[in-house]
Length: 76
Image (cartoon, rainbow, N blue to C red; front, side):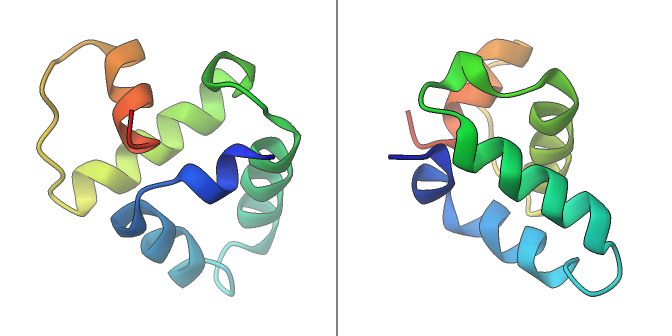
């Protein structure tokens, strides 16, 4: 099971919206998430991009901590 299935809908929508404009970025993130089985398997660059999508979607994080924000984008 990959982490792609656990991604919160707000982030997943923005990621899919960028598919045409940024195909290499999209492919890299999807590949990274498909190969990740736990949150700590995600590359820092991928996690940072996903947090950026979440901030764009106005997701209210419970903390300012990077690691905790990564967990939140996967609904944990």
